[in-house]
Image (cartoon, rainbow, N blue to C red; front, side, top):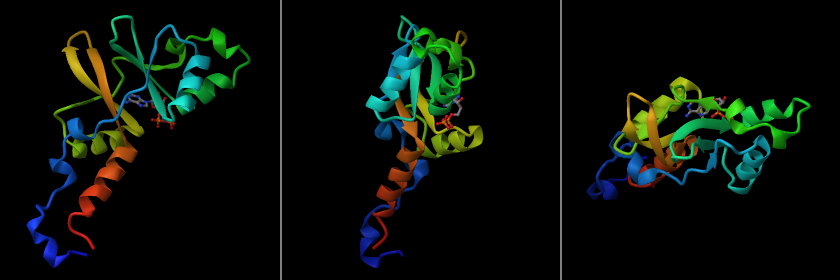
Length: 154
Ligand code: ADP
């Protein structure tokens, strides 16, 4: 419900909010890590996906819970499977930039059926070289929505 007394508060929408202000910490592992290491990290850091970086700290892959479950269905020791065998790799990673809006982020996650986006800074567009500086998830969008609704609801 719109609250009369709250009219001094500017009406803000998701389209006016920037990724820069809402991004969370990315959880990253090296591409030499094992699937077992990735599972440990996903539990310890309580995230749904982790990002894989190379020795130069550039984004090379994404691993989600489903990727890890799929890898666990085989009989091979998970300590012997490197993450780069199972990850979704560049150039197929859907990313978002600091200067993009939360609206763009939400639209991108819905269109691509994914739960999170690595926030990146471009180093070289042609060679798909990006540095990971954060993450945006569907929960980020839900929290922002709730925060913004407080401005004009009872
Ligand atoms: P979950 O596996 O927990 O359902 P997602 O829906 O995010 O999580 O992931 C589904 C698939 O999409 C996985 O194979 C994952 O590697 C891939 N994926 C996740 N995030 C991205 C992304 N930002 N860009 C490209 N692929 C992604």
